[in-house]
Structures are given as C-alpha cells and as structure tokens.
Image: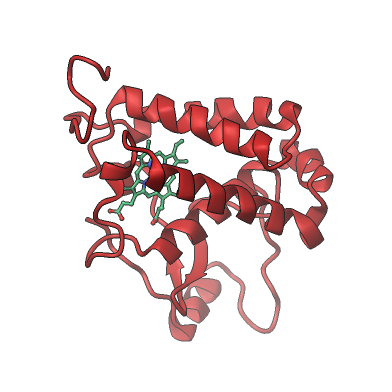
Amino acid sequence: MKSYIFATAAVTAAILAACGGGGSSTQAPVAQYPQNADMWAGLGGNANAPAAVAKVVDDAVAGLLADPKEAPYFAHIGMPGHDSIGRLKACLNLQFDALFGGPYSYPGMVTADGTTQMCDDMTSVHADVGVPSCVFDQFITDAAAVMKADGVPDAYVGRVAPVLVGLKPQILASNPQYLGPNTAANCQ
Ligand code: HEM
C-alpha cells in the first residue's frame, strides 16, 4: 500500500515558510547526483535530456509489461491504492532524470493524472510487490538494454546501472512472491 500526498498551495507555502523560504523566491532545484552532470549535458541538457529519459522510461515500462517474468508484478497498476501508469512513469522519470545528473532529486514531487504528488521511497513502494532476486536482475538487464537501444552511450549505462543495482536491498522482498513462470527453484 502506498500513501499519496497531494500538494496544495497552502501546504507548499507552509513548508517553504518552515524552511525559511517563502515569498516569491523560487527554490533552486537540487541535483542528487551532481557528479553526473556531464551525462545530463551529453543527453542534451534541460532542453532535450528530459525527452531522451522519457523515451527510455516509456520503452522500459512497455518492456516490463510485455515480459512474462516481470509483468505479473505489475498486475495491480491502476487499481485503488496502487500506482496509476501515469504516476509510475512520472516517478520513474524523476528518478532517472536525477540519476542522469539532471537538477532533480528522488523521491520528489511529480505531476501525474492532473495532480501534484510525492513519489515514494524505494523501500516503501516495493514493500508489498514481492520482488525475487532473479526478477530484479532481469529488470536491470532489460533496463540496460533499453537504454542502449535508445541511444544512451555505453559509458553512461555503465555508470547508471551500478547505482540501480545498489538499490536492490531496498527493492527485494523479504518474502518473495513467485509469480508467472518464476518459482523458488528457478528464480533466486
Ligand atoms: C532498480 C530497480 C527499480 C527501480 C529504480 C524502481 C523504481 C520504481 C519507482 C520510481 C516506482 C514508483 C514510485 C511511486 O509511485 O512513488 C516504482 C513502483 C513500482 N515498482 Fe519498481 N523499481 C525497480 C524495480 C522493480 C522491479 C524489479 C519490480 C517488479 C518486477 C518493480 C515493481 C514495481 C511495482 C509493481 C510498482 C508499483 C507499486 C504499487 O503501486 O503498488 N520495481 N518502482
């Protein structure tokens, strides 16, 4: 289960005031991975990198939903209490924009389905998904393949993939579910 946090102007104003901000000043975006700023520039910077990342996310999600080993874990997408496809993609876009060195941090706010929403951290959003180790590994292999197919330079994939792999402890289920063709015997 997840909790959706809908931002309102009042809440935003209160947070800004609590942080010493407020007034008409605009908060400067914070890059979570400033060391990757060269990749953001290489993908076209603020003008073009978001579209390049959005294509990767679109293609990766399409691949996930078409893969018999991975798709069963997304069966609840669009149902009450779970991500809509719009939110899933918006949060993935934010995360990958940050990973590629853009001026973003994850988790953070996104606009999806016409509202502003706060993305969840990796541990809480995957807590009930039941991801086994072999399914996570397949996800990484597929994500790397999609990035390459979409023209992301190998050197960039080689820098982003280990960061994704590093999220494995947060995403793996303590009590994995073996869905579709996955079994405890063939998927560790
Ligand atoms: C490094 C690998 C992964 C990353 C970076 C990642 C990232 C994300 C993000 C950003 C979200 C949306 C968060 C939100 O809505 O607040 C999400 C949701 C989700 N992810 Fe992952 N994910 C990864 C691996 C996986 C794997 C391997 C599976 C299963 C095969 C999976 C299944 C899901 C599902 C089902 C949701 C929606 C949960 C719900 O709404 O109940 N993820 N993931």
